[in-house]
Image (cartoon, rainbow, N blue to C red; front, top):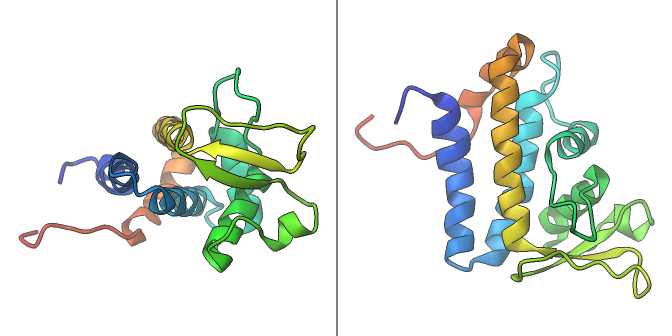
Length: 173
């Protein structure tokens, strides 16, 4: 473990597990971990007075930090990711109540390099490239960490919660 808690917990533990999942072609696991990791980032950054993360915080985090290449046919929307998170966490599926109500698009996933969106075929379905999605998440985390270092308020919020995140520590700590 280093002296940098953000590196140890967010980068090495959370992002490291996602990367290992992708590298080992455990694609369902990498999607679940990434969507859950976004929940963790929203938890870290939510207002100091809050104790539970909410949909709005998740959506805000995605809208602020998750970016993909401009040439991609789909640009990330927080509500779509929240729907994807609900679908996978509550149903182990791609549909959620939000997508069934037409409040968000829904994702299917593939291991290619580009997102696929063909609104003339289905305007609500996006085929998400898992490798691109996870790489975009890693870049989002780097931007989040930069903001933590630049903002006393955000740093205070994150520092008040980061120790409560799941991680495996060496047995000889």
